[in-house]
Each structure stands twice: as structure tokens, then as C-alpha cells.
View 1 (cartoon, helix red, strand yellow):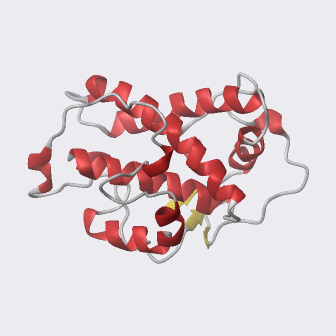
View 2 (cartoon, one colour):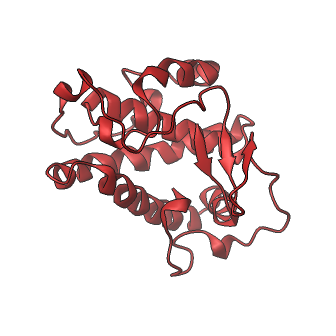
Length: 199
């Protein structure tokens, strides 16, 4: 999968593993992800999907922390949560929101299969053990699976995590974590604006 990575992602990683600050950062990051993916949704369905996305994304931050604790890098841990989201989008037929084509679902699952199996995560159940509370239902559009359109998907990156850095360079596996990351750069810790690159 191809994702972006900048200093704010490392600051978010630091914030999400801290008491109190982690809750603030999670709330802001959930809002960000709902906005970013909501803007990719069919406008006719965006509003009805938002309550589902809000709880779903909130629960994936528990996955993110568990992945970090399992030794995955920031980029890998974040990619794992994005894969969970894409499983969910696929299950609902929300193909216009997917970040990689549907025919790469198995490839992405297999790369993290050991982690996913440990927490009973699979394509049909993207949250697995991280489904610790009810996720609001949202209407599906299964007819889109017959001829999936992926206007926001980037294919051909299923064999590793590919990171686009702030210079626009694509680095396989992610960047080295900077020293002395300032947690104040994390979304929500201060009232700085955030954009799609933080998702």
C-alpha cells in the first residue's frame, strides 16, 4: 500500500501511546479520518456512513497501538489500520472509498496474516478482537461489487508498505523515526490545521 508519512505521523504515534494526550489525539484523528474518507464517499451516502466510520476508526487506533507493541514500524502499524478500513469498505460495497483495488485484498491480508490471525481479524471481520463495542450499522451498496470502481485506489503496491515522504519521494518500508519528536505536532494536541496527508 502507498501511504504518506511526515513528522506529524511520528508525533501522533507518540501521542497515541501516552495517557490523556492519547485520548485527545485519537478524537482528532478520528475526526480527520471521517472527513478524509467521507469526502471520497458517494455524496448521496456520505452522511449516513459517518456514524459507522466514527466508531470503526476509533477502534482501529487500538489496533494501531497493538501493532506498535508487536514491533511494527509506524508506517506498518498505520497501514494495518488502513487495510482494516479497506476490508470494511469492501464488505459494504463502498468501493469508491477504497485505497487499493479489490483484487489486492488477499495480498494485503497475507502480508500481515500472523498479526491478523492473532486478533481474529480477516476480510469478513476487519476489527476482530478490537470490536470492543457496537459499531453503528450503515447501508451497503453491494451492487458496486459487480463492477467495482476505485477512483481513489492506487494499485501495484501490495507487496510492501510504500511511503511517500514530504519531499515526494517513495520509500519502501517507511522512514527512519526522527529523534526528539515533539508530541505537540500531533493532530489535536495543539489547534494546528491538519490535512489529508495525516490520514
